[in-house]
Image (cartoon, rainbow, N blue to C red; front, side, top):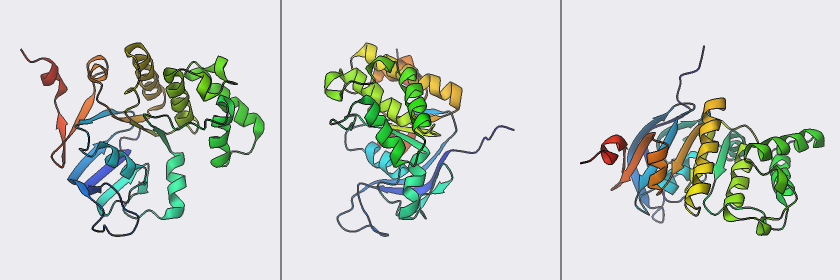
Length: 243
């Protein structure tokens, strides 16, 4: 029977913009309160709101870069409110993370960028590593760029490489922070199509912060609005069908 349990669940959560200890300090700014969110496997969820409204802090909390000080949260069966430091790499192996500014290793070519991630997540068999890299590059249309350096690639190609990197460990969730923000409309559409295919084939949930209204229009899906310290479901059909 298909699992219908949420892959992400937050209950009465408070989201801060930073923090490293077990309790928030005066330097840790509360940005969201009373957050209650369920996200199902295979669901696409947009995060929208003004700059500084808490979208990035929300994503960073989901991959345990910021502690969940208050409330409860579960991502891919890991309890964020109880997670230990040694468990964080295990959580992140079940996630794919895509950044607006790519965060590629500029001193290594495409193959070595991806090999670095697999070795860091304890892949040891070089044949399997090579095969997996070939698979994800084919998925994002970069097989012919395998020996290129990031500096020799366009912005769209670098973002597709960042998506390929996120796919390496067959994630259950992709967390994407403005993945199409620096791209032209055609390239942005190609990235969205990759996400659409991944969701359909692998039931991978995609949680995407975006300011790109065309994403919401061309690939309509559930949308969460971050507004004045709270998170609320937004009816985007009403947003686009106003007379």
